[in-house]
Image (cartoon, one colour):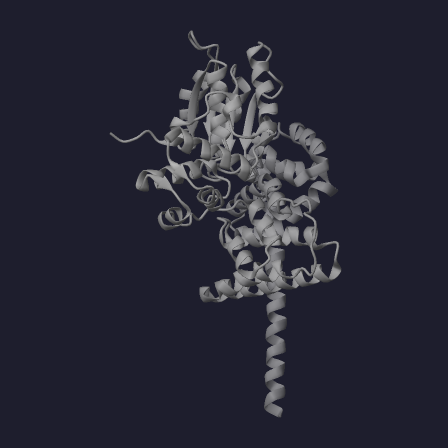
Length: 470
């Protein structure tokens, strides 16, 4: 019979049993008590975030066990579809449990596993769940800072979990060895902890693997059995290891140990180099120079599809930036790349612009690029200069409310009132008038294009005559 995994056998049964994380307990436990008192807190959901293996799920399970709460758990693979959330989580969140349970807790594990594109509906469904719930909703995430998770961050109480200190982790692992009657060397325990970078869950699994294989845990046996575990770094961890790397290999490992794509990785580092090195102009210049080289190399990679240059890109972005400093710099307040934030903020506006361009292109039989470059700016100008005339165009072109709002901007209210006033007119009349105006614009554009073409041809003929004379 296979032995019970130690990670389950030594799972904490009470809040006090959870290793370290005192600050997280001080925030989460009072929040749970408010629910039990019958007066739900202002934020009806909590988002526990921090590195893997530091006790996020363990603390939730300990709370459920200590306060007699029924746990309804779903992970990222379970709540990707709106139907799943409504069928399981929403049904559980709006009902009270049967005795002996004193309450119910909904646990959504690994919400950062949701895809920004493929699982957009899931985030909206979770927000609806939080709005309607009559029971505490707890979410966990290793990295909750993705832009697609912003609505969840705003709707939830954020509870940070720190990496477990080496001394606390060592004491817990030695306690397990004592309980199991296994001889353990402190050096071996320290090696296991360092190898797993503070991940207590992974450390317990490795400890059990060595103990069951050899009946004891020594440094030589641990090194012989356990292979180095590669761990994906969050963007914040990547910046930490990059800016404080002492050797080139450390900096290179930092930029190659994250799952960010090449463009996003560059944006993260470019955004924070001025913040980190800004107190020294010379270090800042060297750091930006390294970023510039990385940008040039990556540009050549994309233009020529020469991926053999990728190692040089990582060398410029990693060691080039890390070793640009000539002195120690205190940790700055790093931030999310502003460009990505700006793109997220303007996503809706850009979507309306694309729909408007497609609509005008279809009506006018022109390309979308022409509609964007010529028709949309002209319609926007008309909306600012003559709202009444623009209202006639909007009716004739059958523009929807979002398109009118995009083009009219501050004159939206005026245009809206003119549209309501003119809407009694036959639709065909307005459509015909708008079509005539667009045809005039097309003719004017074609005329200008032809003039430019004629000028270019005349210049070419003149050059040819001059060459023949020579």
